[in-house]
Length: 65
Image (tube, rainbow, N blue to C red; front, side, top):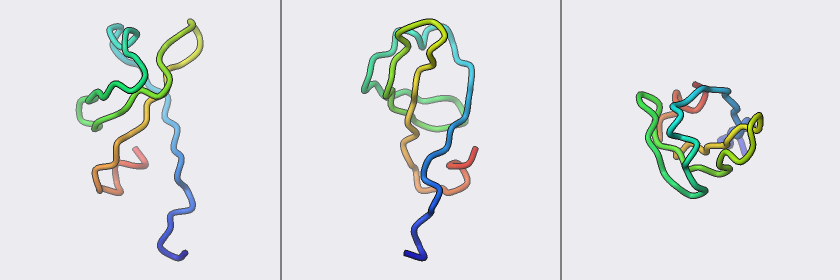
């Protein structure tokens, strides 16, 4: 249990390109200089943000940025 990270969820608000609004659930995208992400919740209504999950690459520093 000493090796398990107690903080497993990070939320970072961000702005993206307008073309991201056509992404569908399950699509994999690469954000420049950030990494790869899976669309979990696509943009459905104005004012409700889309949700992306980061695909871990093994680097711990990228998890907090």
